[in-house]
Figure (spheres, rainbow, N blue to C red):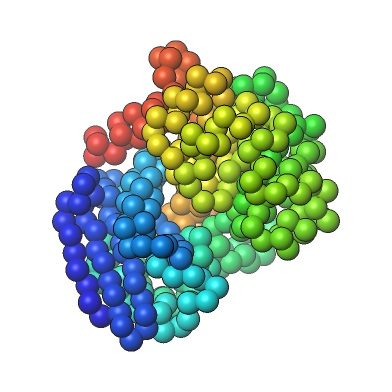
Length: 351
């Protein structure tokens, strides 16, 4: 296993590369900031075209985790890891165990959780080699049932709560019934969010590259299927990006008819300036790392002692955080993403 480390790459504390010839593992861990605590963030597996593409993604994602944990008021720092490869073709036990051994080399400075392209089962395989894994232990709910360590339900719940906050602020509505939502991405979080929205009486338009997931949403939830390239231009109240990042850009923003953006995807803005572009169009943007913090809150509570009542109360705080961001943005005439960044930086720089 070949491991190389680069200190102080840009604004990050540490960036570490790993290549393991025997298993085929190619991975990067980025630790952005640990002023509030140990860096914690998901381990993503994705078929990046180049190592540079993977590096750019892990740098963005790890920085986002610092801001996310700070805004969620957690004693955690920000980190992320990426495995270069197609999770449907390249994933195997040898590769996952090699990733676990790679994490050991960081001596606990970074703790990994589930992310796009990885599952609780995958993390359990890594955990055979390393203790620096979270989000894998079963948790007892209030009704006495056990659920898996998968944090996706909490991410979906937090996004649902955040969407309600945005709707209340922008449209003055407390109830979601009759609201029109276009949702991009029906993965673990996206599909759960569609279920929550459907129960609330929301009309749904959905898109995903996996036709089976779309068919399930149409059949079970009464959603309307939309081609992925057309999801941006639907005549809806809310656009909910729940797939990959950088989906709000110079090409897609002019297509939007929604007055609110509230979704679970990370790094939704292709560039920071796109927050201003949305503001100038009168579109209310719920900053991604604030609205999608339910998952990191979940795995934090797993580490510190799981209590479902306290967990749900903490996730419920996403509503208040977003309302504060929206109000401050209006008072200061600034984009919501700028205000969120300022608030997060206040929290992690004073530690």
